[in-house]
Image (cartoon, rainbow, N blue to C red; front, side, top):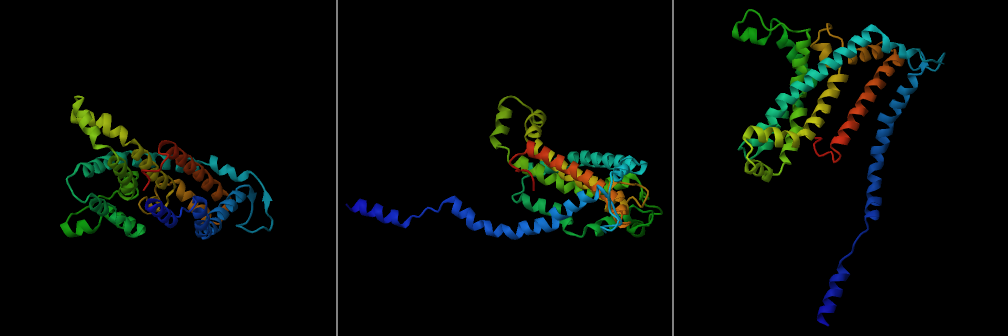
Length: 295
């Protein structure tokens, strides 16, 4: 009898709340987010899609007519050249970031540091400073006369401003942390027993790296590649400041179109970039369905 009463007492204190009720109560907290999303993301996207199919003066409805002539910008020489420059520099930046990013992430992963996240914090610390400030600082270093020539008494500096190489260096410097973090996350998820099993099977350190570590870190490489490729492909600040007007990327074409109030053709190019971004997100979703390596 004592046991039954105890069970009843314990049972009376336990109350299981259905998951549907919990989600119903939490749903109200998502309403401001959806309102924000509709106003600042979905509504501008709809307007941009609408502007691609009309001819107008800015966003004015006066004299607005339906047309497909805006898509002619895709065949212009400046657009083709800028697309080629964007793709070329984006792919090169991604390849360089994969090489150095995997090396840095693997070095941190194999290090004896107790607090490895402190090292990662030092790595991403420059990202907390103003983006334009960092780019302008790099631009001054890439010029012939800079702070290093003044300090060390060097007659001439690098003087690579306005070149593809300067833009490549600036992009690698800016987006390398976006490659290191996903790769490190994927490496941290590797079971330590796999390393011992690899040695038990007779693999050397080099073979273990290529047959175990690299394949298991592939999710981080793919996620990091997308996180580097997309901003390089669509950005305009780096080519504008570091390129010094000599190198034209697709982001610069879009910026110029919107500054000149040519919203119709600018929207066409922006939609093309958006389609590429959605395609990249689709690839990441297929490779890393859990999103475990996206930081």
